[in-house]
Length: 128
Figure 1 (tube, rainbow, N blue to C red):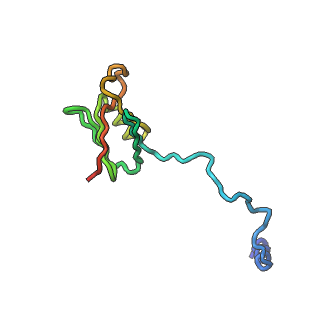
Figure 2: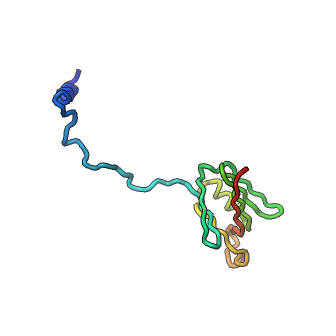
Figure 3: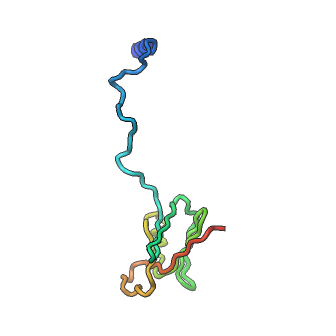
């Protein structure tokens, strides 16, 4: 047995098993920064928003015929996106790097850069 054990054992017999100078006076300990849960937030032109956690994304499908669409299947819901130049957006979703997908009214498509993905339609429905 080592000396330290005997000392702690003696303190325990005396009813004082811990050293008071070593105790922390804080009741809770917090991390310096908030956690980084990966969520995908969908925004409609009306201002309505809904987010889903990337952890529950089961699959994602990009189709370019007859119109460009992305279908995201989560465990509880399916999200359908329609728009222009969606392949870049599909890649960002695959990498879990995009945070917000905002729906833009189609009449404003011409004012955006030709390299930007534009979502003109978002539909969320329950996965069957």
